[in-house]
Amino acid sequence: MLAVQNLKKSYCASKATYEVLKDVSLSVNKGEFVGVMGPSGSGKTTLLNCISCYIPVDSGSIRLEEIELTTLTEDELATMRNKKLGFVFQDFMLMDGLTVRDNIMLPRIISRNTDKSMEDAADQLCDVFGIEVIKDKYPAEISGGEKQRTAVARALINEPLLILADEPTGNLDSRSSRAVIDTFLQARDSFGATIFMATHDSFAASFCDRVIILRDGKIYCEILQLKKTRNEFQDKLLNAIRIMGEANAE
Image (cartoon, rainbow, N blue to C red; front, side, top):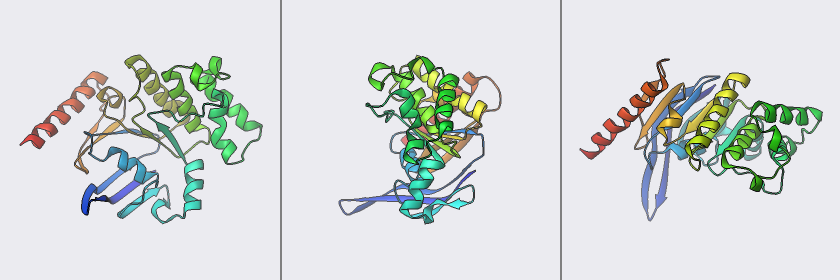
């Protein structure tokens, strides 16, 4: 589904060059829920921005199915982002002047694919994610968890190949965070969604099928969910982060 090979990205500031991603290679299979963790500055958000091609890479390959994203024109990338990628952000990115239902339909409206199936799909997503009772409300009238479920539904309206989620639980309390993670699990199980989520939250990451841990712009390790208890998986993640922190301190 997604294959990243030898990805490098650096930034220049005050005549100095800072390497953010250092030869990163990874893959995400269809229907997988994969997390990427790491401390601040490890490159999580930069990695997601490179995959979506919102920022250019220095070198490397990013393939979504058989499409090499790094060679697309701006117009081709815009079409790809609208039709093949779904996005869920920490700050929701909902349009305040649109209802929940209209926010969900927005990607279809932008792509001018506005037949009746759009409305049917939006209503189905509202039903599946338990937001049908608020679909005529505006973002200012709903909770943070409801906003994020709306954002997940919006990300699914075009049946994307991949959903990219950047710290989707970062602004939420524990109850709302669990509701959002349940929404991702439902998206995977009910719609076959493929999800790549950057998070600093071991609780959120413990629901993933697999977690990639970044350290200083490189992949430090990968940890699989081996169908034991979720708490055991979370303990493994925390232990890996602890060991990584001890190594950094040496």
